[in-house]
Length: 185
Ligand code: IMP
Ligand code: MG
Image (cartoon, rainbow, N blue to C red; front, side, top):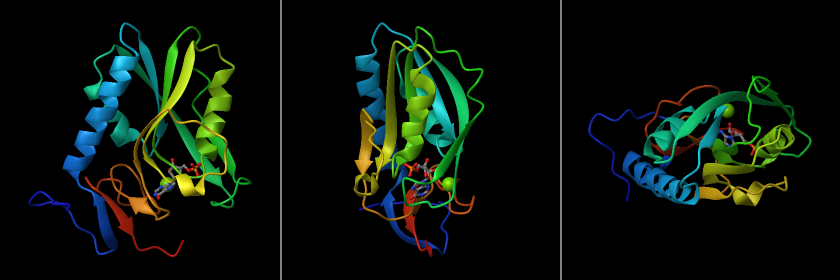
């Protein structure tokens, strides 16, 4: 059962709340503990994929116990949203130096995986010691790209979700919970 803190914002479009803020916090801490253990004694560069991963990155980095630096890239997709033919652009990546560093790509949700695959392509050639990815949510049934995401929080069904940084037409990123929304997608 999900329970929302008193005063939590509600919106009419919500169909079902999948994860309340407490469930999210627990999962983020669990993922952070795994990452902190795996990178003990090392330094990590987090690359946050804007806009959706801003909230997750902010929480994740505060739960990590290894030294980190953080960078931000902007990803956008155009065209079909459901096929591998969609076009993805990455911006603000050119000044990020990762040579000789351990790098962790951070997104809130992996859907087709095309965005994450594109980011692996973008950064793999720039000499990182290691390059891995983390996502809070995984819509595995929709995967078209061959991409490996080492750290995953929750696997979810093929439903459109908002909140905790994720939007529908740029709205609802501020919701502290993750909810399935009624859309026409
Ligand atoms: P992918 O390239 O298909 O894996 O899509 C990844 C991006 O699509 C994510 O970073 C989100 O910005 C967006 N996305 C995918 N599924 C959802 C969803 O259910 N709600 C909100 N955004 C989503
Ligand atoms: Mg979006």
